[in-house]
Every structure is written in C-alpha cells, then in structure tokens.
Length: 347
Image 1: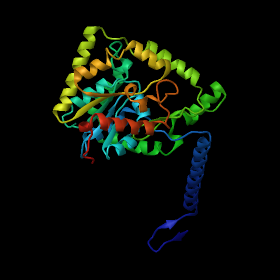
Image 2: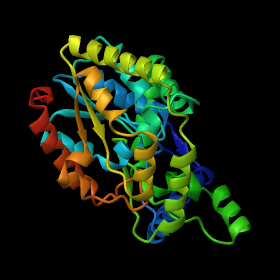
Image 3: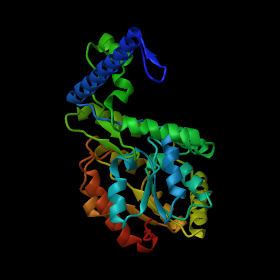
Image 4: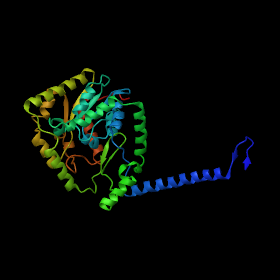
C-alpha cells in the first residue's frame, strides 16, 4: 500500500474498481452510439413526444415575452401544414407559438386565449369543418380542455423536466418508445420484423413533419375518408349553430377588446375528404356565416389559387416538403387580406 503526503491511500482493489467503471462507461457509450446509428440507418429520425407538458411550454410563449405573439390554434393540419419558423420570418420575426392539438377542435383553445388578459396577439384559428362545427359527441374538445387545464396547474419542476426530456428526444432516436428493447421484442414476436419508422415526426416547436414518400397511400386515404364520413360528431341543428356562432363571436370580441385579432383559416384538403367536408358542412351555411357573425377576416384555400393547387397525399395533410411554401403563401395572403392584424413589433 502506498500513502500520499496528504494521508490518503489507494489500494490495488480500489484502482481496479475505478478502471472497471471507466471500461463499463466506455462499453455503454459504444453500445449507445452503435444502436443510435443502427436505427438511423433503418430510416428512423429523432422525434419529440407531443405531450400536454410540451404544449404548456409553448402556451407560456404565447402570453409571455416582449412583442405580440402569433398563435396557431387548430388540429394536426396546422401542425403538419404550417412551419412556425417560416411563418415567423414571413411576418418580420414575430414570435410564433404552435398550440394546435392533433384531432382537436380549435374552439377550446380560442376560449383559453380569450380568457387570458395577458394575451394581445394575433390568433390564426383553423376551421376544420368536422371538428369546429360539430356538436355531439364532444371528444374533439376533450383533449384540448385537458391541455388547457394542465397549463393552468403547471409547475416549474414539470417545465424543467419537460425541457430536459425534449432536449434529448430531438437529438436521439433511442429515446423513442418504439425502439425500446421491450417494444422491439414485442414487434419481433408479433410480426417477426423490426419496428418501422413513423412517417410523421414532431419537432421541439411542436411542428409535425409528414413524409409520405414510400407510404402506401391507398389504405391511408380510405381510412381518412371513413373517418371524416362517420367521425367528429353530428352537424348542429339551426339553433345549436346560432348559439355556437354567437359564442365564437363573443370570444373574438374579448381578444379584440385587448388589442388582439383573430383570423380564421381553412387549410387545404383533397379528394373525397374534401368532398365529404363540403357535403356535411356546406360553405354558405358554415364558413360564410362564421365570418359574417364574427366580423373577422378569413382565409380559405378555396379562394386562393396559389393555395388550392396543393394536394394532400392522403386527403387531409400536406407532405413536409410542401409545408414551407404553403406557409409562405399563406403568410402573403394574410398580409394582403388583414395587414392591420399582422404583428409588426417583433420581440
């Protein structure tokens, strides 16, 4: 045994143990890198898990900070079809918060912003007809209410934990649940094949990117057609529609009274999905009356040739390659149709 001048000592056993720890860490690092590269070679990309906690972080950006925020309220069509980064540049550097929720009506989100006295920005509110105007059942609003309630009760610890998790998820494929060992084993046992990469990934900004290249579109189209034909509730009776429009008008009024503005947007849809939407919710009864009752501006792809030329591969969502250009064209139309509504005091 050797003693140091300071009285400490190192035994052969402790030195061996230390080297073993370093070897274990090195092996673990090599395995991690190898596994990460392996999944990437199979077509996987890092993706962030879209959770109510992540939504809360983005929601805080809508009401906090300097300058007027531009907020996106809608469903997955907004998440997939609109690039917050591109929209921000097109609007002179405005702060853009992506608050859309997959499969959800934008109405509960509009209610949340209307009740927030701190919010004085621009709202782009997506009107997906079967989600926005339906009355029963109300599943299309349940998720949104859960998100807004979670935001009201969020904690600093939860925000910090979410930020740390997102930091790792947007950099590492191995953070995805589908490539965890137990799920890989399950896939091998059930289908005798490895998990396949999802065609949609989520970024830290909550933007989603759908890559339809190589996807079998026929069953996907059929699934969406069936979904829009039978799901998302029932069309409202005349009295129910009047009450809904009155409620929306009140929400728009609250936001305007604080200096904010609301612009309604109908995103592009294609094929039978579009036909189903137009049949169930004819424009003159729903979209036109919405704008008339609220007095708000509205942009629908039907009226803008540059936007209507886009095609949704499976009928409901844009490919990620189309989203940047679609966003630029939408921003151009927004500036042209509602210049006073566009935030110019960027943070």
